[in-house]
Length: 180
Image (cartoon, rainbow, N blue to C red; front, side):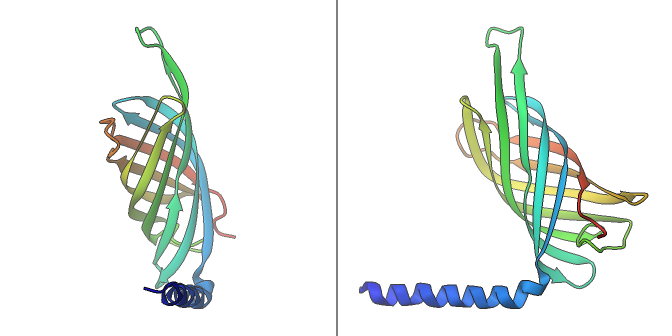
């Protein structure tokens, strides 16, 4: 098979994707949050700070959106008083597609509460100690306290790396650029 037809197919795919993005451009919306979380696995348990950028790419009526999300976390694990004293930084990098409903689905949502669910994949890294990865599921609720928008999230990663260290996490976040 010649490389010419394959090259032409790639060019046509890029043109189609760019054409689709230009039509969806009016729907793209960037939202981000910051907060704290608690992460628990067989290998470690730690608190972390996190930053959560989200790109809404499809709006479904007034109350729903689909978004591409990542919830970046940075924590520090310390184990003392045992035969294996350890201390290291740890990160979790999940990438998910989320279905967002009502509060928080867009920057201008007016509902007092809402929810979301999503799925994707995650990489968990104990710097210099271990690394694991696997499918990741997430879900949460969003609500306003006065004019301040908040989010409570839960996530679960199934470890496929062989470390037998699936991870569960919970977090509390403030949505930064809402209602502007």
